[in-house]
Length: 115
Image 1 (cartoon, rainbow, N blue to C red):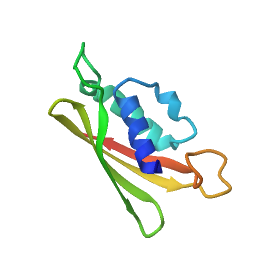
Image 2: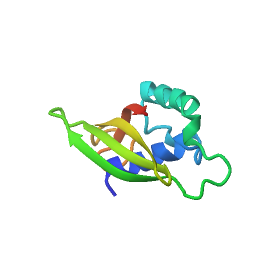
Image 3: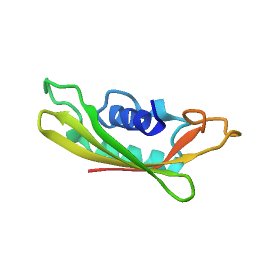
């Protein structure tokens, strides 16, 4: 599984309330952590109300490498039948010397937005 797919799934888990924000500790930089905290509060419509009938999932995920090696990622997430939302985030490699992050390149999420 690629880093951008992994992060898209974990960010969706947090925004839908299936996992606590703390599950991403060490993988999300301070500014992105704050953005995710605010999004979690603002995006209450992403959390299930009763039995929606479908588990939210990442429908499509695309990444674009910047000239400095970071990944700009956009994902379409499905919250329920015919209910789709957008999720965008940036991943930066911590390099081989990094002590935290995800994957061999030690990716960290440095920005996140959701609509």
